[in-house]
Amino acid sequence: MPSMFLKAVSPIAKLIPSVKKPEKDPGFRTKLFWTLVATMIYIIMTTVPIYGIERGAGIDVFWTLRVILASQRGTLAELGIGPIVTGGLILEILVGSKLIDVDLTNPEDRAMFNNANKAMAVIMTIFESLVYITGGAYGTLDLSAATLVFVQLVLAGIIIILLDEMVQKGWGFGSGISLFIVAGVATRIATALFSPIIDRDGLAHGIIPAIIEVATSNRTWNEIVLRYGAPDLMGLLTTIGIAIIIIYLETTSIEIPVESSLYRVRFRYPIKFMFSSNIPVILAGALFANIMFFSQLMWSRYQGNFFVSLLGSWVVEGDRPVPVGGLAYFTVPPQGLLWATAHPYQALGYLVLMTISCYFFSLTWVEIAGIGAESIAEQLLASDLSIPGIRRTKGHITKYLEPYVQTAAALSGLFIGIVAGVADILGAYATGSGILLAVSILNSLYEEIAAKYATEMTPALRKFFLGKTAV
Image (cartoon, rainbow, N blue to C red; front, side, top):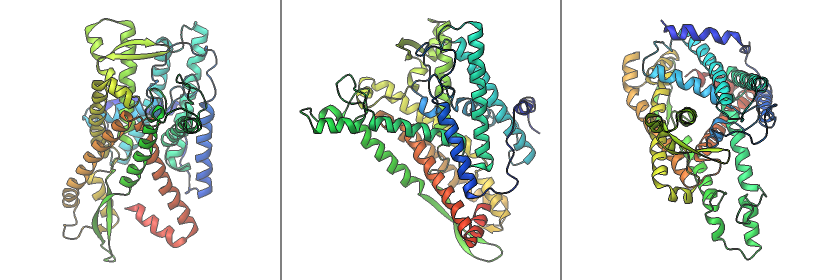
């Protein structure tokens, strides 16, 4: 039976509108249409400023994590996907630590868990909106202005939750979270490539205008190989390199032989190297965001307290609070190779913390998402498939698959953390985590869209893909 926590929280989801699953599978054009609609609505939200606040007022707590949170300062997308991911993060930790008793293979328990997930996203939207306002993120607001800002943040947060729910329930491709992250990363990369704004060294901020300027003037190429606080050639090469590595690893897998019990046809079941996909990075980003959030909040109220300083101590530079000690100090992504060289211990600590976090979340996510060895064994048996030489029972197949699944989950988590951390140190555009997420998401979207298009174009392929999906 589900825990009392799930029973108490899940009904909250019924207080807000819900998106129904389509009664039949939407066509390719319908799914593509709603995918574009969800993305466009979100992009519009990132350009609409919050009414009732002064531009540049207050402090930007999440300035280092805007890419992962798919958020935009001072707009209706201020909170981004933070509440959704944080709510899911809390439930994942509770389930992974066995503090919540829930059987995710039971349809009733899974339905209650999904409702609790949505409810936690709503709760976190309300909570983060309140703390944002009371914590001075928008400066000092009177009661009426604070209420107005709070209502805008909550309503915008609920819209984002519903957009994500619409896509995930089958109306679109991928998930809302994925689409919003890609949109944010694409914007950041475009800015890094083409921005004509002149930086403090007299060169264009965008790397392409900077290259043109260097090539047509007396300035040296050394000026753009490494730059502090602006896109450089090292970052460009890192971005391209990370994209190639992730695309390659997305296609790398261990293939387990299986055969049909009905037709005696043999083929291979792939277990991807990137087994847990990009989820660990998203959850690690949410964890870092909350460490920074609560640390900054506690420091602003109990500055100088020893135990608070262990979580993080801060200074404010402009509108940005910057951690200078404690755990929060190691959650700030390095801003390039020059920055990492000037702060070696912080860069190393960030790399270690990112790697450990991704490793932990990768192992936990495998069980929560229903993609563990036991779940795969159940899917194989339900599809009348078996592994040659292994008794056709759930226990024996699970025991055979367990080493492959656990190894893939552990290695993918470790590798994702290392790649994201190293990419940040080398100055990848839109952060290493952002590039990793965007490439992984785009690859998954391409596969999903291509499969959907193919099944609609060819009836024979439709039967093949439906049969493969059942596995």
